Image 1 (spheres, rainbow, N blue to C red):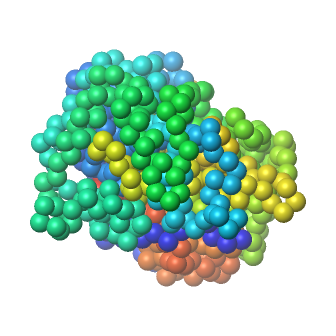
Image 2: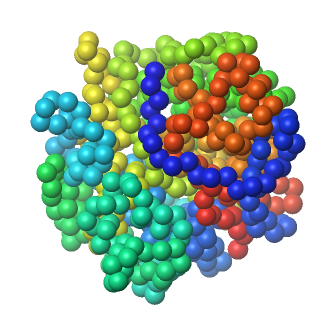
Length: 572
């Protein structure tokens, strides 16, 4: 099986080692603000977004209120990752009822979409780069509508008062973050699109540099309109018309209409929760990565990984569970409104034990999907999911929690802008090939109104009494499942502080490959893995992680921010 991971740059490690280098993986440390007795916290990928969330918490807002402010600022200062024109998944923990609700703000395909949406005139699938920058790549944006649904249910402040920091920064200017400047200067096809070039070029003809004061008055006007009118401001009227007009331009126009925009509805449901040892882990259901992460945990529950803290056997078990998790996810998961997703079968304890028994003393040459209960015939998956996403966690003074992963899909989405924000290229998350030679359909084939499969896996962990324990998630394209699984294993099985678990080196195992941040593993650990048939390689080039999380300790909350990004975890 070929790797589904596409060439993007691996984020570099920062130096520091939290464990002995001769016995365990190296863990680069990044200090996060950890005041004693913290009762509220925001962990996100940019300090300006964190401060926006903290201001809302200080004003008496809830985690749902703060999430709106965090997303509004992230869309401005981290437009390569998320924004008003993108989508999201969220899980929300209500401290009073101890219920966890999943919110689905995934984009939808327009009514005019066909199974061969990404086929060229020659009858063959388009190249990924050409598809991404085409008008066909953009689905109806759902993040803002999803946030409005969650904030209406769980917020305390007025919606109109949650966008002030984003408006101020857009109007008055903000220092360009290093990651934004690097993305603008990158070779990503979106960065060379006319809208992006114009946006990131200064009056002297030079590209913006880190630290430059940057303004976006059009974004300020857009968030003012959203503050006044709610998601209707984005899905109807002038801005919606601009989105439709923009995706209809170019050689491969999309079919998005005003009717598609107006018809968009976010979804809410009970989160998908399963026991894991003494905990309960909750994530969104399909089409998110939630079922995959829970399957990975369920397989590991049949092992003794907890006795192998950050050693070769522990990482070996992690790698093999990951391979099995990805094989099933890739074959069976799609939008459950359109295809039968065998979630119960995938998470059945007997099935998980059966999958775990495939983990022998040495790695098999390759692995394939199993046959869980409820699984019909499915074509092999040809989804080529790129990266360009962010994750944040908010805990408020009452103990309510938001864990939210949000995206415009690739770097700067499609590279097309309207009204100060980039449009998503989310529809390229569908399988480009809708069926196999025998006519078996791909679970993630394109269909009108369908939401593409996602790897986004925002997680909340509870104890068996329903009390909050931890929340974590990550960007990373298809690697998200492995990044999130790694952090959960680090915190729940290896009993690491959140920051240490996040900073563990990344490994993504699927099919016959083992992609990793190789320099993060000691020579002894690499040798131990190789003896088990696991040879690590730097060559996959997936999007680096951006894990952010918060956990409960006896002295208060403790957060973690990924050293591979620019974020922080702070209390009000």
